[in-house]
Length: 242
Ligand code: NAD
Image: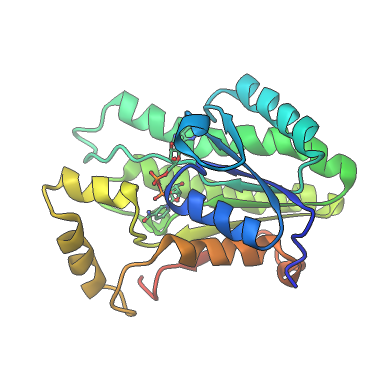
């Protein structure tokens, strides 16, 4: 039993990719799930879809208040919204830097800030944020790597601050997962997405790239009862890659 029946979850960036797979998985486990995304109502077929840009703190606070009013609470937050703007440092613009830090790191701060007031008041909650294997360093991704490494430090700190309120805070760090994000990365280097995946798979001990559902299942574990004593951790989901 995962213990998700009757829980209310928010998944940011839930309209596609890993986020959409997470929405499906949490719903299968019995949670009521709100998708928070850019144009969520147009792009997602989820029952509870909310348009919101996570870079805007006031908008995030307003939408979280609406979700709590509509769905009766907030038990689980999955910080999944993310973007890439890859460039080597000498070509990386300030906008490449600011936009990636703003969505991937400040967006997580905004959503945690909005969620913590409900979770600390009810003295329970689960937060999982999407870091990345790129947090260890990845060519052309200085902005993204910094944001994703920042998520790990932020997670460790929030686990200390929110633990006394019975709130578990963790991160997952996927490797190469086949989504629109990785297809766009392939396109940027002029590669066919499937060829790009085959090349990446050669360096992965399990000899294949991951599927969004294989990240969603780990997120479901971390927000469920089976992970009740896990907090402050970053769990790598990368087929054994270094
Ligand atoms: P994706 O591009 O398919 O989906 C990202 C979602 O985030 C989209 O629906 C997008 O609209 C939403 N989003 C972007 N900016 C937003 C904003 N400002 N406000 C609200 N929503 C916004 O990406 P994905 O591959 O499914 O990745 C999901 C998460 O997993 C991201 O945080 C990504 O960095 C992380 N991740 C992905 C991989 C991978 O290989 N795909 C690996 C490691 C980490």
